[in-house]
Amino acid sequence: MSETITQLGKYAEEVGTKITPLRKNESTIEVAQDRLKLFVTYLVNDVHVRHLMTITGLDLGQNLAIIYNFSKERDTIHVRTSVPKAKPEAASIVDIIPGAILYEMELHDMFGIDFAGNPWKDQKLLLPDNWPADLPPPLLKTTKTDQIRRRLGLEAAKP
Amino acid sequence: MSTTPEQQKREESVGLMEYSTESLVPFGPIHPALKEPEYFKLVLEGERIVNVIPRIGYVHRGLEKAAESRPWVQNMYMFERTCGICSFVHSLCYGQAVEELTMYQVPRRAKYIRTIIAEMERIHSHLLWVGLMGHWAGFDTLFMWVWNDREVVLDLVEAIAGNRVHKSMNAICGVRRDMPENMEDRIVERMRFLTDRARYYRDVIDSEETMLKRTENIGRVSAETVEKLCAVGPMARYVGLKRDVRLNDPYAAYDEVPLDVITTTQGDVHALLRLRLDELVVSANMVAYAVENLPDGPIRVKVPPIIPAGEHSSHCEAPRGEIFYFVKSSGGRTPDRVKSRQPTMANIPTALEMLKGQTLADIPIVLTAIDPCFGCMDRMSFYDTETNKSWTWSGEELRQYGINYYFPERSKKQRDLARAVSSSTNQCLREDF
Image (cartoon, rainbow over all chains, first blue to last red; front, side, top):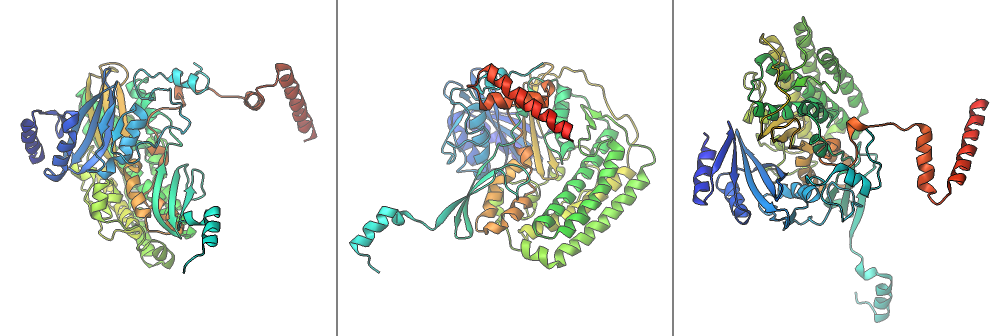
């Protein structure tokens, strides 16, 4: 186990969570949404884990998981938090890691999560400008391909 | 100088008071300097760029959503089609994430073959990029030379994999084709040739006035900014960050093949040219080493089509930088979620930073410098096509669609009449010729 993971494990215990190894060099840490910014600040400033690879969204039914995928040398660290699907609001980490800006916009487009504090959060990144407001975000499990096709006036896919 | 009240009133009425020195210039989505559609909103002050706002997504095909309804193996070849240049590394990275879930070991020979193909792909991608840089700098001779040499490596790839671009070499836990026999000498000889050519191009870009004037001191960014913006690949290495997945988290056979990670601290577009040409030499040496030390043994392990439940991620060093795949399985025949992040997405914030302070004329060369692949970047979620359910329209159907689209108010009879007239015109035209 590398030094980074040992150090993170100690801090995780202090804040009342734990670090779960997935495979060699890959670990997950569950962090509550209200503690996330504090945790990321600690990660960047004290453990020097500075490279955010991307932010992954997952649809878990009632909740949406947001996974911040960090890497430092050999270690991949997934910082995992979740927001309720009924109220998908999260804090932006752009002020700590400016490189997160496009990933947050992507999650806003694909899962409808609002990142408070992202300067470009009202702008679309990947979806077309004429994306209907009544259509649910496309990557949710409840959104079906045919539903979007119908709403956009495209023909259903032929078998 | 004071203005009289009348003057002031007149200026206000024509809006002169609201004028600022900043102007907004739209760049793209269709622009001669971009080979793929992307839109940048440029705020200019005179000729200098003050701010850039990107708008991507014009070639968004919805691969992540499509992956959720396809079998594991089929996805591997679908993700390979994310990019038309660095195709192999996508299937490799997706495959590695899935292999972690299966708990099967990839045979050593397969790992070496993967390394050979991945490095050949890097050579071909870097050569393509050097050619494009020559093109945008107004030095088309370099473009033609380099693309001619690129054929050398593409021919080798074709001889091994059967295809030039979409190699389809990977399988889950192995590769699909073994190396052809008696190819070692030919590969090693061709790699030596490419090394010599790369050294020659290195001399050319260091001495040719056109290249120096267009690239030196262009696109300077500090190392701290690049680190904060999470840039990957050559875009991180050109300011001195030693960020390379092959070194940091070795996959395939990279822990056995000697690797030399090149970094520079020069930090401009010219440094990127030198860096990529040096990397090309390193890759050529790696291919030669891997071919000469290719171990014997099986190339593939058969894996059942159902992948156990779990979550795993994998990252690889594509020619443009780190790519990342996250895979979640719920124990079925199709994945629950596949997330892919491509290097251009990670490098766009840095490119915007590089553009600030440059002149409008430098945009093509700075944007090309990051080696953008907008087709890759846009891949993710969803919008339109279901590849395995595609269908084609005949010319007549397409024309009918056009008539219905533009004249929805016309009755069927009128539409039939229009169709009859136009097809008889076509008939006449055909008879004339």
